[in-house]
Length: 133
Image 1 (cartoon, rainbow, N blue to C red):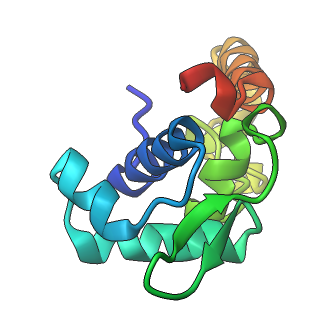
Image 2 (cartoon, one colour):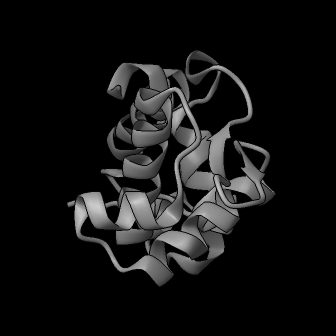
């Protein structure tokens, strides 16, 4: 079954928290609230900031805020910020390099699975952070 990585899960939790708080949120606040390793939350937040999804504010009352409205940030944006953009498919034959599949020409399930992959991409592209707040 398709499964998001823990880093992506934590990224979505952090984005949801920051969006719901509507104020500056720190890595410590997020890690304490959800029982997630502070170091892991900090790394995920750095990736989200580097991707331009959140903005870091330095200082005593520092932390993170959304870089733009939650309604303008897709779940795909969050996934790509953490995992990087990828051409991987849900099965081998749906990758950018179909030559790695030994039965590609005779495969009877690549088209139905391609539809599933397309639908997953559509859901992740159209679903916004505001919908999980």
